[in-house]
Every structure is written in structure tokens, then in C-alpha cells.
Length: 439
Ligand SMILES: CO[C@H](O)c1c[n+]2c([nH]1)[C@H](O)[C@@H](O)[C@H](O)[C@H]2CO
Image (tube, rainbow, N blue to C red; front, side, top):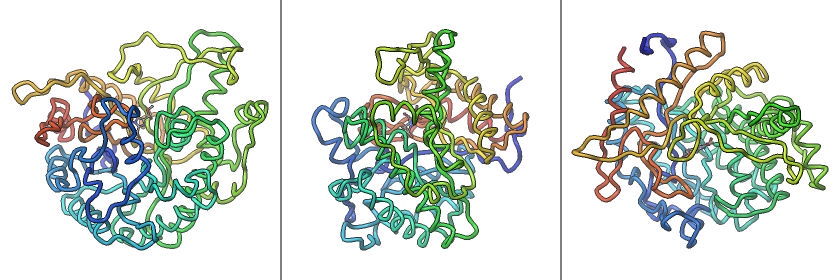
């Protein structure tokens, strides 16, 4: 029996999600200053096909058309991020033209009965702050607080749902350890310091939010992957626990318990790493929800030859174009785990897949994405029926967009973008969603 919208709570938010650098383009327009992603994407060899976000989906000029598409599909929520370097100059003066873009976007969403959910930071740190040390400089938390306060003051009268950071695990591990993301560092000690300053920035933003937007809610969005032992053994179970703490626990526990998870902390200390733990009182200020970005599982095995005592193992399930296993069961497992461990309301702030999408006679037949979404919706509904306080689900993504180091080679959208013409085409999955959201 096909799943129906009417099986979800009436006030459940079904939305879609994007981020500024991935869709806006107009990187040099109206005074916008460079971010670390502008510099990283213009560094030869960093991005597949040496692509960049200079134009992307030209959303800065086409936002009204994109909101009309969301309305046509029937979404009642839209999660997007603010481009920090678009709204604040390096002299700390506000960029009114940049702010006006977000004012117009928010007003257009509200006129179309779409609830805005704003992410303050989705990786596009102003480059001038990187030159001051970026996430390695403890002062970054104060710069972030000032930026957050500006956005709360400008939009807080109309926007009541806020997310401080998108996936601090990605900002720290991909940006400072694996070197795959901006700023492209490869240093585990820097990674730990950046992670701590990201958490501090989150806390400072929550603190000022409570003073400015008294009738709003604020949370943080984390990577949430189901970590499983590749083969059942005591050593592999221990490895899975350790990786779950490194990927998931490190960015959830401090916010709720005011401390880092013990096994991961013990491992890092064994490696001789410094674990900064200042401001845990600010980091662990109460928040109103956790955002869950779920895509897949991660299979691990104990590996005594690795300094981190584990290695990743390739799974055997069908995979998306990103090479990620399709594993809807993991969504249920992680919603239950996070709800039980932390007791907060949850929003699925990202879930979706990259597919081999082809435009043929104005049609994109992405049946695989319909099936993916249906299976993950079923698990979300199962979680709600089992008493988990899940309040919304944002499909990643509205549009095909700039997929970071993969450039435009991976298409996550339910709407196909022809980057040569900027024409938008609803994929079969968007048509399916349109019908689903009406039942
Ligand atoms: C394990 O996947 C991560 O949770 C993740 C996946 N994704 C993300 N985080 C980011 O939040 C988006 O900007 C990406 O475009 C999107 C698709 O790659």
C-alpha cells in the first residue's frame, strides 16, 4: 500500500533544502565578498572538471521562479542558508543589498505559505576571516555571534526556525583533515580545534538568539550516519562504537551533556592530541531540536594498523551515484537512537540521492529517486508511529546544484537544471511528490 501524506501529522513540515554557495551564483554581485569556497573552487585541481559556484543555478536572480516551483510541488517548508560574505562586509558593516535579497526571498516564501528554515552557516566562511585563522581562531565564535545577531535582527520578525551550523563534522573533518573541502587542510589537531570552535560558535549564536527572537526555535544540523560493523565481531563492534562517537557523538554529546564522548576522546588523547574543552557551558545551552542529515550507513572494521583503529569497508547494497548504499533502515535506527539519547524534537533536514538523471524530450525519468524517497518516507512514518518526535522532512535537494568537490557531476535535485540555459525541468520525482503531498 503506497504511503500517503495524510498518514503524517497534519502540521508535519514537508520541505526541500538547498545551500547558498551551491545554488545562488552571483558571487561578485552587489558587493558580495569571497568565501573560502570561492577561493577553493578556483584553485586548480580541487573540484572535478575545475568547476565552481560562480553561476551555479543563478538562484540569486531566479529565486521567485524557484519559489513558484516549490509552491507547485506543494512543499510547506524550505530550508536554505545565508551567504555570510553576502550580508556582512569585512569591515563589519552590513551589506544592505545582500540583506535585501534574503528579505525578498523570505517575503516571497511567506506569501506562498512556505515556512522558511534558515541555516546560518553552510560552509561558506568569509575568506577574510579564514585569513584571521578561520575556525582555528577562538575569536571566530564572536564573529559568528555578530553575524547571527544581524540575521536574527533583520529576519527574526518573520523567520522563526533557525539552524546555527550545517554539519560541523564536514566543516572540520572534510575541511581540516581530509582536505577534500575548503579550506583544504590535512591536520587532525587542527580538525579537533576547528570542531571545538564550531561548537562554540553554535553556542554563542544560541545565546544571542534567546535575546533577539523570543518566539522562535533554534537547533543545529549534524551529519547522521548509521555506523555498523562490516562483520560481526567484538573488535568490529568496538570499532563501530568508536566511529559513531567520532562522526555522530562528537557533535551531539557536547550540546546536550556538555562533554565529548569518552572512547573517541580517549583515542585522540592516546594520539597525543590536545582536546580543547572551554565554553562547554555555552556549547551546551538548551536548544529546541536536532536537524538530522541522513543519507546512508558507514561500514567499519577494526584495523590495528590504523592510528584510528578502524577502516571503512565497501557495502554490497545498491548504491547512488555518490557510491552511498541505499539503506532506509538506517534512517529509522538513527532517528530512534538520537531521540532516545538526547530527547529533543527532530527534523530530517536533508535526505535524498544523486542519480544518473538524463534529460530526454523534456522528461527525466528518475523512478529510482521516487523509490528512494518512498522507502525513506516509510521509515520516517514508522519512527513517528513508534513515538519519535519527528516534526519535518526536507528533501535534498530542490535543484541539481554544485556538489562541492564533485562540481556539477552529481545531480541531487528533484528539479533538473540545464546549466547552459538555466532552464528548470520537474523530474518524475517532483511530479510524484506533487501527487503525494496532495493525498
Ligand atoms: C553523508 O552525507 C552528508 O550528510 C551530506 C550530504 N550532503 C551534505 N551532507 C551537505 O549538507 C550538502 O551540502 C550536500 O550537497 C549533500 C549531498 O552530498
